[in-house]
Length: 338
Length: 277
Figure 1 (cartoon, helix red, strand yellow):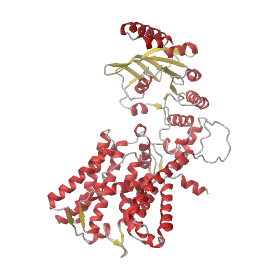
Figure 2: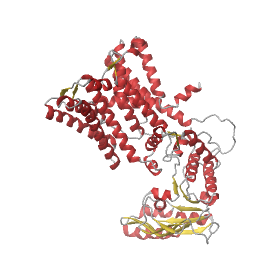
Figure 3: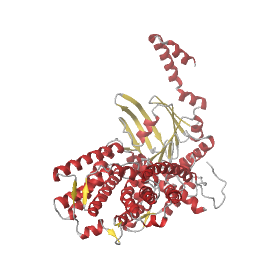
């Protein structure tokens, strides 16, 4: 009983409940075979793809900012790798570093604009999103004359970034996702840097006055979101042996929905990596798991919409519970009760 | 106390924003173990004055002295490092953080080694809870509770305890009782008294004369950016202070001015009505 109420006060509560709710819904109304669904690779692969970026975006949102340029950064990372190592035939190492460098540069650009100006980061990164879409398409046409570039990666790069594991269809990206989430969990919940992120999200000015390097932390978080997205793009290019120019608009909302379902407060100051992790799983199961049900997959967006609203309402309630929580007293003290 | 050097002293401080003079010729002294109540109506310049003390603004003219030596604050952090700490109306500014975590923002205690240095939650919670209990708020006994779940008075107390813990010598309390009920306000006043007993100089901003009289040793009334009165406890009655805050003699001059302009502007109706009040 105590364990349950403890869980409900955690930011991750709503995402875990949403996950259970969605699974129950699929089993009852979709006639899904749970064993089949859980051993399937499609949703895990998808969860890893959005989950890696969602972890970084979740940290950024906990600090009170948002980055939607991630949508353009996934194809940008893929195209950079494919153009450098596929079209120009340079060693894959250059392609990998190139993709990460593009992420760092765009992240720095977003971060520096965010701390130097008072323009909301939604607008700044909307600008970067559209600009990067243009750069990737025009750049690809200019350099290669095509919007799709083939790439053949050597064995070691495939092993590290883009192979299917155990002869099955689970991508190696899943391991990266779990590892990145574990590191992020440690940083956010166990180190002083995590405390800074929460403080910045709570009140930027007070955090600055308390001695937190607000600007530096914000810039680093923007670099992390952009780089995580270009990393995912790079892995995809290596896995699928090619990269295409695409808008990536769908990814933006999928990732942000995962983070919000995961219990991160849109205005910052509250959230958890466990929640974001389960948020990505929940989203992926709704989106990809619907193929395992008798339900027409066109309904999946309806389910996602409903789930988002329900999860946000639950988050709201659980946060109130967390605020009102007073531990039972070990000894009754009848002193001050202001 | 006249023989002591004041902790903080303002000499002929002016502050203007462009052509607008907000503060004019402010002279004030605050001693250790003394509560200075800064009274004044909205727009009288109280917040400009405390922001000048806290390093948010630099004075246009005049000097700020600490322990008799002139100091220059270019940013809030300078003032904080000298021991001037401001606690705002809503106290805990990180409502969704735990007591222990918010207490140590920016100065987190850590344990462990190298890259595995972790935030020492237990130490943070213990220190924070002890600091606030020392101020008489024994109801706070779990450092994992979220700040937003505390009552307004408890939050103020936590913020004051935090400032004192980190070595504040001058505590600036900006309307700490404004949003509180009678009972909660009395707890905050008790904490102000406790801080004073510990030898801190407290600058207490309020427009509630009762609260000021309950803890104040020294009173300063600001009217339109000028120091209209500066007196010690017992030198003026509550009625006189209330009068001063409402504008006092200045108000009479103002009324006369309004009446004078009234005839020139040919818009007498509503001005007369307000004058009659």
